[in-house]
Image (cartoon, rainbow, N blue to C red; front, side, top):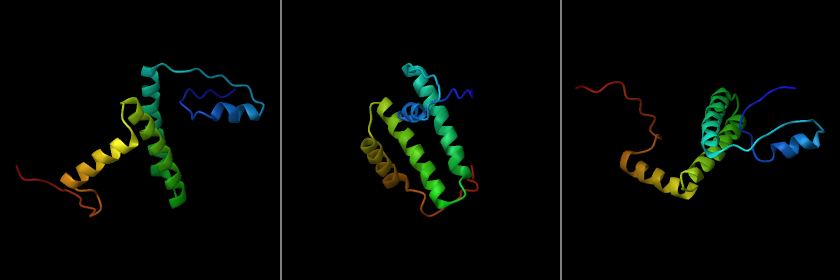
Length: 107
């Protein structure tokens, strides 16, 4: 039986159960939940970076967004709150639309 030891989406146990396979899960405490959610964010970011098509990239970005939703919730915030902060930062510092790459700044 393969060992995964990773955070999975909420409906994965039901999906596995429908296949008739045996499996085991546990409910994480808050500390471990955040630890594994952060690990999952790196996994999904790696998958996004490795995506070969726009469709695959969008799928991985959706996974990252799901993680961002969960992390925002953990911090007592919402995606709407995050969007407000994002807009404020974009207003003050700009976005990344102009593709500017900073080489160096004189001391």
